[in-house]
Amino acid sequence: MTNGLIGRKLGMTRVFAEDGTAVPVTVIEAGPCPIVRVKTVDSDGYEAVQLAFEPVAERKVTKPRLGQLGGAGPHRKLVEFRGTTELTVGEPVTVESFEPGDRVKVSGIGMGKGFAGTIKRHNFHRGPVSHGSHNVRAPGSIGASATPARVFQGIKGPGRMGGKRVTQVGLTVHDVDAERNLLLVKGAVPGPKNGYVEVREDTGRGRA
Image (cartoon, rainbow, N blue to C red; front, top):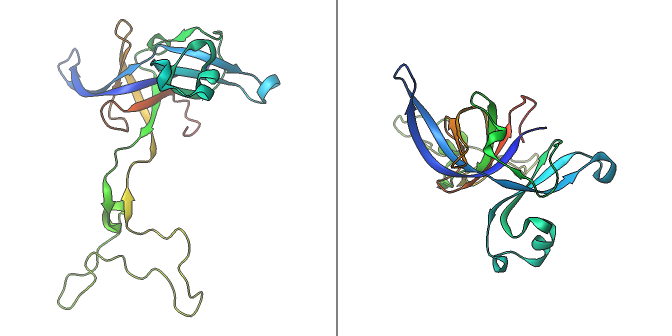
């Protein structure tokens, strides 16, 4: 099975190793996530597992989503993870599915940084700052004149920065606290405090 969990980023702290070195970790409250549905090749054409997270009052969930959640009851989040499982519908997936030293990748909505120019948003170089220069932080030319006489779609320009889905790969599970449903991941993960994240086993086959 490809291990996966839904969680909430609680924030960052540091723990000390036996030799006294400080290790920066992100604390993620993950699971327990009940299995809502198990997809198979015969029924759906591919293998996947749908997990729910964070129980809420029934009035906070739409009727279509409530029907999709089935016997798991009303939950705030529903995420599908590719892979197989030996568990059945209704059984919970907990942080115990991970062990210290496991390589993981964490996906979430990165923090929005507001309107930004091309230098900050796309790492453009600035222009010269000598006498007479009017192109210090301007993006420069974005199109030709006669041909094609227009600006191509997708040109990198100023605009809203951040607030998009980000997947941080190459992370490592530092510790697992099964009693409090906590995962301590070495390094930083996307998103603000209390933001939802998806923790997946990093098999090295690409991003989620």
